Image 1 (spheres, rainbow, N blue to C red):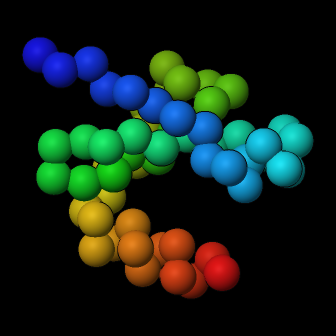
Image 2: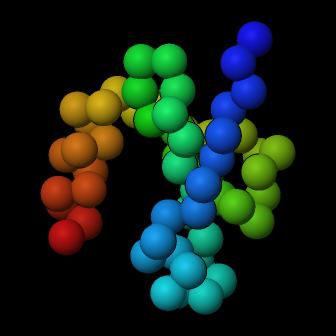
Image 3: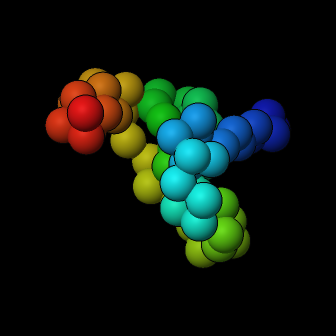
Length: 57
């Protein structure tokens, strides 16, 4: 079993308390709240994640 490596998004650090972490998952990208890592994560396909990032710009 491969350990998932989470990393904090660069923009989260600039926002202070708005902390988002990302990880590569098999077949996609994981997104979670760094303040509540045990609360679960959102799993997105790479295409859906790309579209989300484009909409947030």
